[in-house]
Image 1 (cartoon, rainbow, N blue to C red):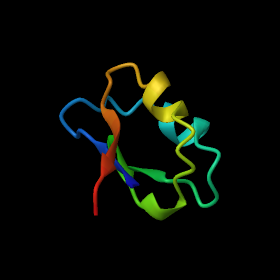
Image 2: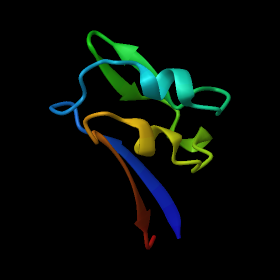
Image 3: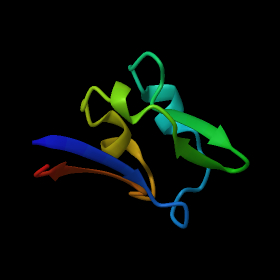
Image 4: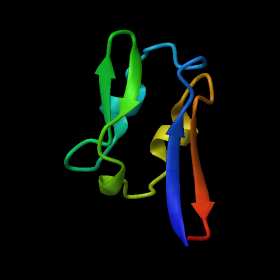
Length: 66
């Protein structure tokens, strides 16, 4: 089962914690305007740092049965 990462644009406050905490190279996230965007989902290491530290719970990592 693969993990699927999503970010709620409505809930994202643009704090950039996900960008600064992401250990992946390249970083999974990038700031676009005032919200974070997922630009490299394939690089996600499933460490959960972004999910656990997002102050608005805007980021989710879910299982996919594909």
